[in-house]
Length: 252
Image (tube, rainbow, N blue to C red; front, side, top):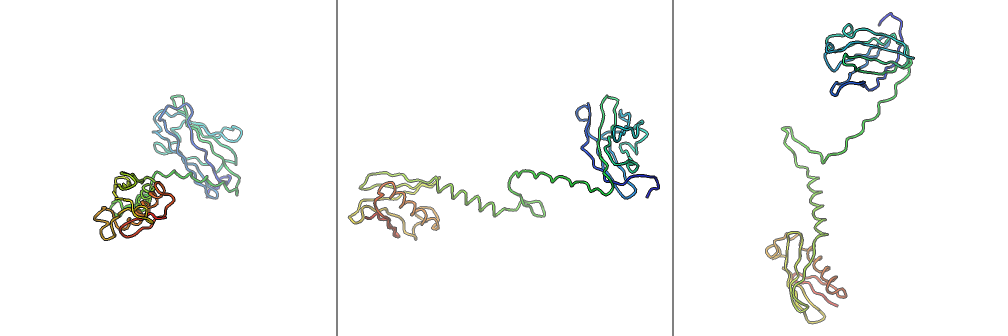
């Protein structure tokens, strides 16, 4: 702890900036260290201190000059500058480092009264998501995301349900109904019957379904329900449907 008179109080740094600097000049980097009875600001230049820098100037409240002199006399190494802020009373301060090119680095800071707690740093704005999280094992290999795969499969099934349709060939006495779902095309024969059955659609029974259609047995009920309801809606809305193992009947 130093015996020199001074003032405790937190230091708040503003973002560093340049005035009149060329592109790519870089900014000052600053860090504070505050302890009871001692504190300082450490500055790092973005370039070698001997590369055209001229003056270090520090002003305090109401523009009072705190320090001014050649920068080279304040360098600690090639790019670092240590500034003792303990003697400074609370208030607004400004650090300026000029360059022979006619521009300068600027850093504003504020010293608070002793015991005053500085405001918390603003919460960082979360970056927008750029896609699903990618999981990797200890060797960097991508692990399958089963949740994502399940969601994608479900979305494909939903999209298919809205895109599938029927096409009809022939006439009321007999013909073919074509079930279309993406690249899937299944043909079902239909013919007129004796009442009370108005007409019937032949379908493969469960034990022959996969061989006849190439579709899994788990899809059979869904396909046949769509086939029955869509045919009734478009061709015979006044009739009812009865689904059997080998046929779909349309009855009164």
